[in-house]
Image 1 (tube, rainbow, N blue to C red):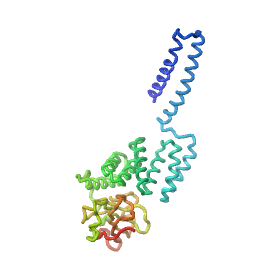
Image 2 (spheres, one colour):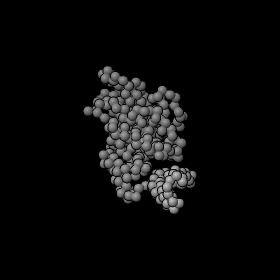
Image 3 (tube, rainbow, N blue to C red):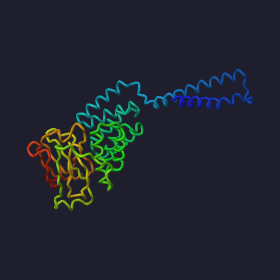
Image 4 (cartoon, rainbow, N blue to C red):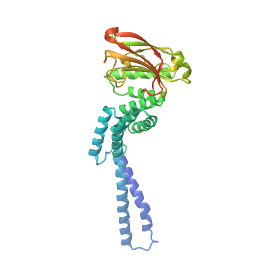
Length: 325
């Protein structure tokens, strides 16, 4: 920081000399006192103008927050509340205000806006979410939330390599063991989709832990409707509570028929796994848009499974034969 200030002072001195030099030359018809008065005035003007400009630069360099921080905090609180209640439009509006008030420097506003845009799911919002994620990662390349949201935005755009790189960057940070295991599983799934060897050797599941083996096939009558490979999501969700899947894997339609095993290692959130619900819905869905959220035109199949009635480890068969209206 000291070096930055020294450079600023040096630039001011250079500017003063450039403007003052003609005054010091004897060719200009001025008395000695007039020359020095003009020199002082030039120095004052340049110092005031430069000081204002450099103050802004120094504030930005230090992550400066605006004077109206109270108003920005109110918008951040509104954004958090709307995001928690899954009100995407309200969350976007609130975080947008906070983002503008902070002049694009507040990380919570940036990450909140990115998460809200991803929640809204439409293509234009996902595109803007990707831009916001890039902005956040420019400010703080090792911010765990920015890396996660940047990876999710890339997944929505089917940029698998970018998503994998961001998830790999997260592994170098201080994360809980379960979160690291989830990331490693996600990275291995992306490796498989990219036709590459798995990056990580995963620890064996704990004996007795819940698992569901899923055999997935496509109804032959729908085969002709698939003109190019589609993204395949195999997931477990809680039909009683909704929210993010308890477990999910991502594959491609050209891998069908397919067998996968879903465990708590496939959870999206450490606090919501297949250990969280006794009765679950297992879904296999081909996404026309490539996004994890169900949309019109997707085709899917589903079946219910009860851990209490059918056992802690089970197998289900799913035929993809229905279309989302």
